[in-house]
Image 1 (cartoon, rainbow, N blue to C red):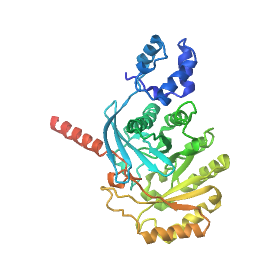
Image 2: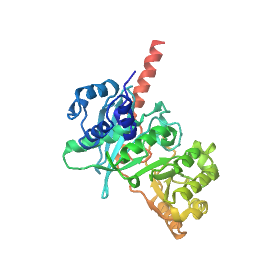
Image 3: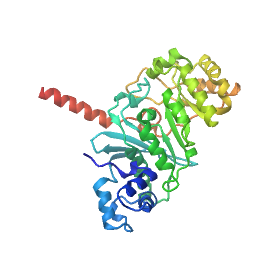
Image 4: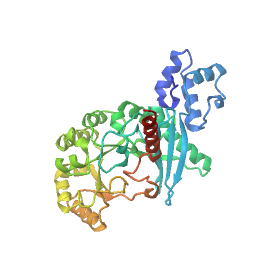
Length: 364
């Protein structure tokens, strides 16, 4: 059985783990300092731990559970990392640089079962959830890469918007959030972390009860059930009216702004009537909501979709703003390396699966 990554334990979990084995609780502080402040990649480098303690850690955990398969750099400086997991699966993680800091987009699942008809991540059905350690290590590996460059950069923001539905991997997601947010480690502020969901209603209610002040984004992409079901099959089981009830609960409970994400598809959901319908849908939430309008990024397999024309995007934006709905048009990064919103997937993984199928057919 594979040993888990130590990155998957929150500070309190690690403290409990040590005390249950007769070690002092302060060992957790020492280990976290080595992992997240000094950022070593080997237990043997933790020089203020006694030999027996290091051996105990080595017997039960690994630090590295992801291997860098390849890295691509966009013309705009965005970096896309392709990581190989211990079981051979591949995932993608993206580093984006902005005026306000460096943001990492992390993946939470191998593949995705949500099945949005415009998103490349769903081209491979879900193979499994990532462990919390595998999600944390995406951040750490990107940070190690930045450390190696020697420019003093640090990961300052996180968006959980990579491959997979985060709320479909809820427990590991929450462990990940607590690890990266802890002031004993990376200390990435909760307000600098955003989790995006396609609208898993029961988990939105649950997320509203959490004590973390992490930002929430809901992938809406259509203002009515008929259209949303057409482009997002999740809407069949999670219809808009029920989704809006969950959003209302979240807003009442948290009293903090929520973002609606809306990918604009030419001639599909970008018409003035769609904008007006969207206004009607969320006008009672406009004080605590923001609409992120996202130009569609092309995916080879989805030839039925095109990016909306600039005029259509501006008209949509104007209708929302004139009706008091705060919104903005997202400036996409990394589209030339398939690293922009909706483009993430592992083409290499797809190739590997196709090869495996051919081999099995040949053997048969």
